[in-house]
Image 1: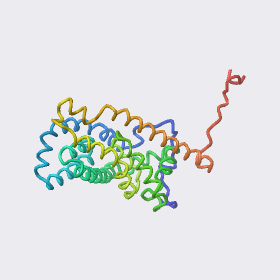
Image 2: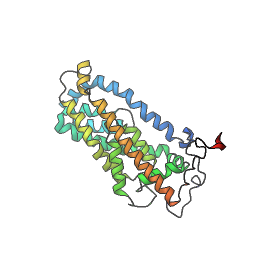
Image 3: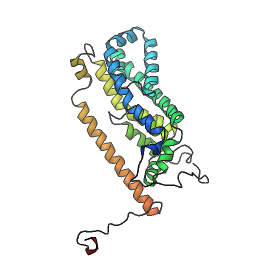
Length: 278
């Protein structure tokens, strides 16, 4: 949005303490679907992997192309989870071909998710953000290189934040696609940040898929696909990322207060021992 444009919604801010699901229009239900649907498809994919993987492998390069296309479409439309599909790539093609295939599938899925979310949610999410002054400040600080908000004003900052958000191994792919697309991040840092941020976890999952012996449907193979340390490490990394994002958001709010863009926090006058508070 250019400086000479006025957003009528932004002129009617709500309290940051009064956040309603309806504030975000179609973006809210879309986010719920993106968060829940892939988990359902994941169980189905794991069960059929021992059958699908040999079939794809026997098709050679054509099988790899089919794998990439299905990965992109189903992850972009929040039908199948990326973890199970990356494991399938390693299981079917090994690390040498499975990793590049999974990364291309990730990239294609992120682009499909990006443009699909924009078609479905429109401007609902960003208008919801603009109703809450602190949220608006944080989003503009995190992603200054946004569509219609000034060209290339913060490419590297946007790229760094997207890479950080994508890095945790349990970061929800489809949900993140919707959030980033809905707040109008620019497509170039979005795509590059997605590739960089998801490379480590994709390489790990493809490797685990490649070393599996036996069928993925039995208990032993399932445990070897996702080792015991994967979940606690993933949670730890996620907590660190959330802590960094919270600190950056707090810094953005404090700077906005110092510039006069946000009102200063009201001092608590009802302190213990104050006779007027008794």
